[in-house]
Image (cartoon, rainbow, N blue to C red; front, top):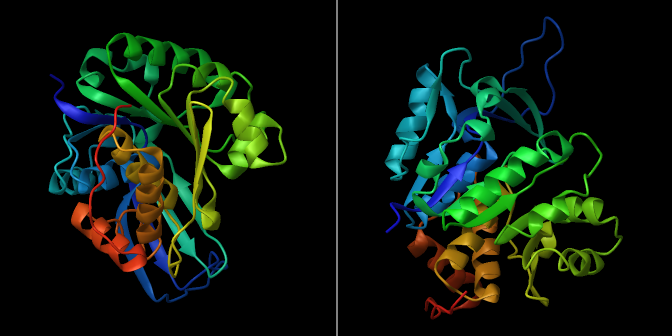
Length: 319
């Protein structure tokens, strides 16, 4: 028996959200803003919080500083039942901070990576990570860490866990084709539309998905305002987005991942998993902060009832 439903490996930091100011003040200038809000940030952390809110048993593996911000994050995790025993404490760096400016059009950030710099896949205690029946990995950096990432994935598969991965943006601009080798070993492979088109060198997402289907058995692509699409075992399934008023899009993709993987881990069909993912993403953008707007399962079902009617949980199917 596994100790956790899921273990999440990746980045965690403080998000300081500045409301009502879209630019950094000029030298010597003081600007008063509408509000400043402090939340837990980092894609992996936001995913873990959203998944825990839905009722799954979650543990988090990352690195925090020995400071008040690190303590705040641990307390927030504990509030939602996230196990923190796999989190290391840095002796060198303080907890990372990201200052998010939220203009009407798009977000911009000032970030200090801090203790996240010390997260190294090669140092993970894989027997402890494999205490989860599922492991969600982040931090893929293309050619830079492909060999290590792939080796960790293979070792975890040997320990009997299922795996998901959200690759994120490639800062190098190479869009390393070794990612297709990685797809062969991941049970649910997640990305957004722009990333999928860059990696596949295709102009249409349908063509990109067909290309990736030659390597991965279960690919999920987030399409923003158009919803999301999945290619599982060669079958393409779409689900439209829910129309809501967006306040802050920070963490929307991570919230989608949580909703979708909740469905996967509960043995639900792809269409329902897409619906849950889109609903979680829609709720996320309705409040400032990456995980503030995400709800528990009852809140999710209430959202679905308002938007499409019905609160019945579908029957599980075999994966």
